[in-house]
Image 1: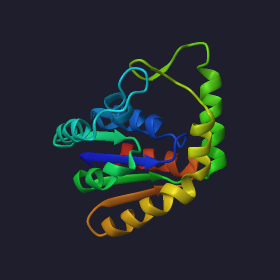
Image 2: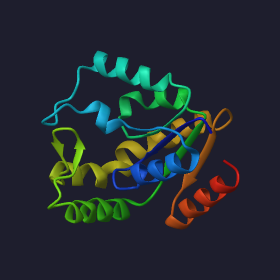
Image 3: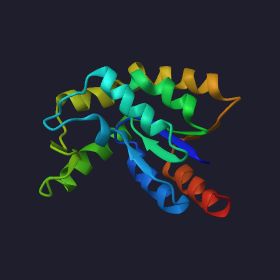
Image 4: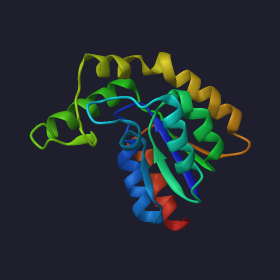
Amino acid sequence: MERILIIGCCGAGKTTLAQKLGTLLKIEVVNLDRHYWKPGWVRPHSDDWEKVLRTLLEKEQWIMDGNYRRTLEMRMSYADTIIFLDHGRSVCLWRAITKHLRHKNIQKEVAPGCPHKVDWEFVKWIWQYPKNSRLRECALLDQYKKTKSIHILRTQKDITAFLAHTIITP
């Protein structure tokens, strides 16, 4: 595992898993939100974003988490390992809301100048994820199943077992 891509709905635990794997494997963690968003939740120009992303993808090792549907296939093509956190939307919504409440007084930022927030658009995105994003992600995973190491983790027990296996055979 040299280039690990972690995908899934917001609130699925992508960043948490990336950080744990980064510590275990001593590989740099790349949180795409930190590279994508400009202060004030401003989106970059698509050409600029692709240049930044290609620079990140061309590194020899990384653990990358984030969504960004438009560049998903590009990221999958560079990865040797893809982890799909396939939790139900109610689990993801619960985690996103409780994370927001836990960090409400801490001023945690998703990216520099982008304070963590849970608004109606965010809730709607999580709730519609199975219909709007999950099916496409599953279809792409199916395309790569012969050439990539793919792990679909549906429960916390699956994640714990995956991490235990990674400790034994990094």
